[in-house]
Image 1 (cartoon, helix red, strand yellow):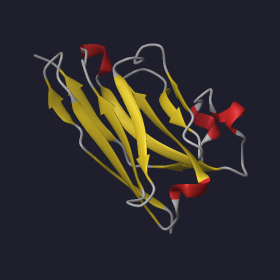
Image 2 (tube, one colour; image 1 turned 60 degrees about the vertical axis):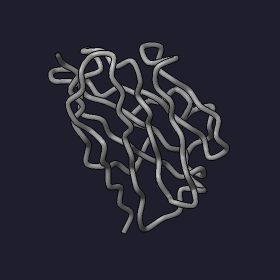
Image 3 (cartoon, one colour; image 1 turned 90 degrees about the vertical axis):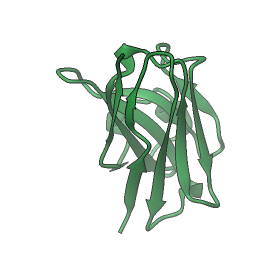
Image 4 (tube, helix red, strand yellow; image 1 turned 120 degrees about the horizontal axis):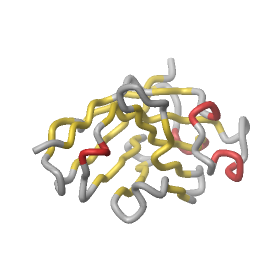
Length: 129
């Protein structure tokens, strides 16, 4: 059974940092494009950052220079390092994956949520003083 387990969310002050983790089980991340998404109350889910199976990356303009996506294929885990956090980063954050045979990277690089098949349960990130 394919499953993601997310961790690392919490409450942080503006300017602070968090690292989100997403551990995959039941499948190997080697053959998947991966992504991080977020959804704030009353808003649609949006792409934060996506990474191809070959480690190409793309970031939303709102997080460029502050967030870094990475993967550890040995640990079968995806990470999102978030620095210089702002109140507007407050949201539930989700990791997701799609097999490379489902979509090529040029399509996935747009980081559209509807391109991804497997989702974690989400972890809350709250940025507030």
